[in-house]
Length: 118
Image (cartoon, rainbow, N blue to C red; front, side):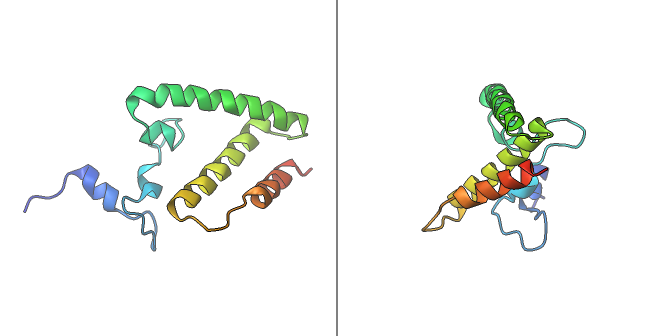
């Protein structure tokens, strides 16, 4: 039997012990080192929509970063990306492993409070 193509082998590789994702998105969503791209839309989106998604994300980060700066964030761009990463993960988990009762407000308040502490 021939060996599977490299992409198929990589998709079955677990990023860490105990990871049970079918195609281990933890591994395949990462951008290659040194590319300057972020994981997520840049790697998983179809090429036809990748640029549009990237521009939309940059616009949203700029807008929310201004809001965070108004609230006193010392590093609004970076903190905005941290907030978005949290929100992305929270939504991903709710889609993949939904909880019957889901109220994200407390977690969002906790993250925002930590990011805005002086």
